[in-house]
Length: 152
Image (cartoon, rainbow, N blue to C red; front, side, top):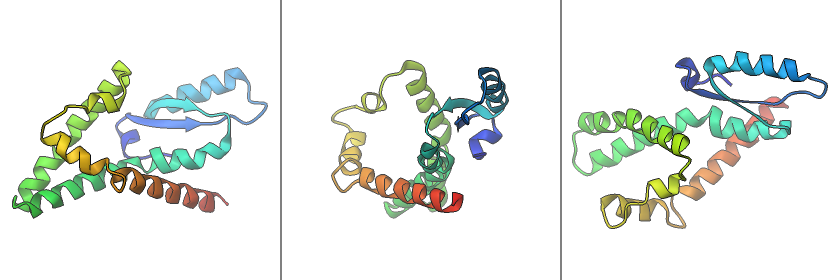
């Protein structure tokens, strides 16, 4: 699914090959899809709905995260424009952080672990039982269901 990162050749495409597709045909398809970023393959076409929920819709989740963080900063007293500018600037840092996870293959959980500081306090809230994980679980399940509906 084309999305915002694909426009700057930083996308990820997950594909599946129908039975009977030759290795040469799959290779050619892979080469064509690489024009917009990285290519991964799944054997089970049913996994395309979760892929759409996670990766195809992923840029919108990042946009929402920036929006939510800016709103929280404004609630703490920052001018809304300043809060937005500070959060929008995270985009480049987030990209570099994602590249570091990909390049080093060190789990994101290990890379974010910095005990005792301000980030640790915020992460305690975000990682609580009622924090961000259950919200993402519900959100991606809803997006995956909708993908199935749209395909049907």
